[in-house]
Image 1 (cartoon, rainbow, N blue to C red):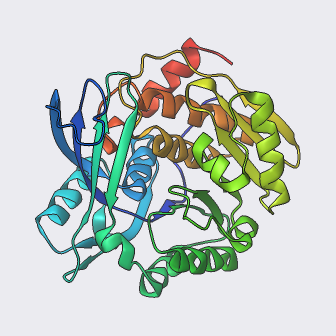
Image 2: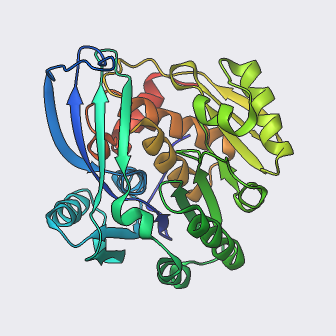
Length: 316
């Protein structure tokens, strides 16, 4: 099942904007080791920006609400967002803060390590929620993540629920003390990967059966709909109507940095077009798989024709 037509209402993203400094290595350094990178780059990142670009590349109308500093990195971010079809008009420039930074190392197998400096993202507060709330309508989809202060995230979740909008929460990175019960109750859907699922449930999924057990635990914590991402081993989806498993797409990965964000952007677009959870999960999985086949974060987001070609070539 393919997404058809343009979205009549925008997809909203509330969250982080970073500039990514990336390096590709043959292998990760051990403590005390210095390595020469094979190559390096500077690009747009941050889970919020990545999700917004991922949805825009799929022809969605996207509104991104967040913060940057008022510095040259903010200019870089604004130009990159415009280039990818996301207007930066809803980003507040905070003169007192640095635009968020992420330092990404990727090894020859496509695995990555990421160190984030939150900067302006960690100053997002009630004034930003006040800019988001009037934009929302009942049924609108809002994507958010855990790269902003948790108090702000909880307050935003309340505001989103009050309007009757639909919250998709990527629980990444999971806070040291986990997520509280309120977020499990307010989010319509969460999309943890293996590591995040273990942090939330105490269970580390490695196949469909263990992912089902983890999803059951997420439901007992109060979550209505769960998607457990297993990377190259597939994706499990679960809600009151049942559970299903999407096997992995056969691609050649080189960089997994943006896979989760492209998955979520695709998921939002598919759900907003009226797909059921099964179809939307498969569409999102195709988006995530394609993102691993190219370098970068926001730049790795696939287009709608690319996703449709992969879905047609590897029917489920």
